[in-house]
Image 1 (tube, rainbow, N blue to C red):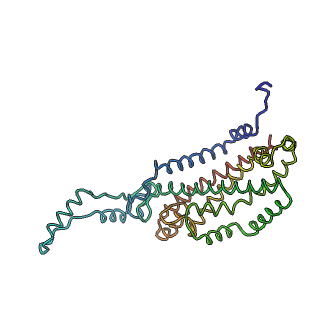
Image 2 (image 1 turned 135 degrees about the horizontal axis):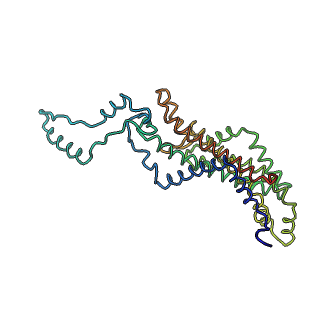
Image 3 (image 1 turned 45 degrees about the vertical axis):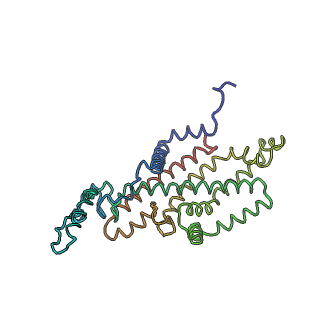
Length: 336
């Protein structure tokens, strides 16, 4: 058959619909920009020195300008020479030693303003937001992959085999869905009692498989009776080959859409967990931990850390949500 006579496949049609949607392409550009930021931050090319105290405490953003208190604090933090005490026999030796130390370690004048301000330790809020985004995005992506992988596996087994296997998985599904998701997440977090990025990934992944399971189970029930699966059975294909070699490629778009949706939910869940103290440990920064710190800073009128972390999270979540909706519409076979 001539190549020009062949009809485009599902993914080609989906990409054609996405390219025609300007909002979807704009959202995709924002998501790709955040993913590029994640790669650069993970490689240590940007925000690697976010823990350095480069400014005075609570240095305001540059567009506000340094206040008198910040300038006074910067001046007070510079070391000053003190005249030696004439009654101290070791005063001269100590003065020479201080001079040698001062010569080998010259004082660093701390900035009184930064592009997005500084926190209470003088850390650059912009670099801190980038580093915190690395943690939050990694948690969202990996936890969503774990949840979709479990949901796809359980849904495939339940929908393909049916019977007792289907009843067993439906029983587990009913237990997990009978408890509100946020309470389930907090319960598992309290039971584990070990903070860490991997712990958060496991918490979200092990509690978020129910949505993908429900959809994948329905897809497998529908596809296992179709002609191409029955033909594979007739030529001797095994059950696992039919499930994951024949059916899975035809329902993979459902799993992809579910993963894009779960990434948004899990990023917000990580922020909630870190805000409540069940998230990342001390020494690891995330958008949730930044919001947790910002609640105390608001009392002092220092709002820039809250604005930076909340704005970055809102931009990514909004872009990911718009792209997930557009991807779901583009992969819908009913839309021509």
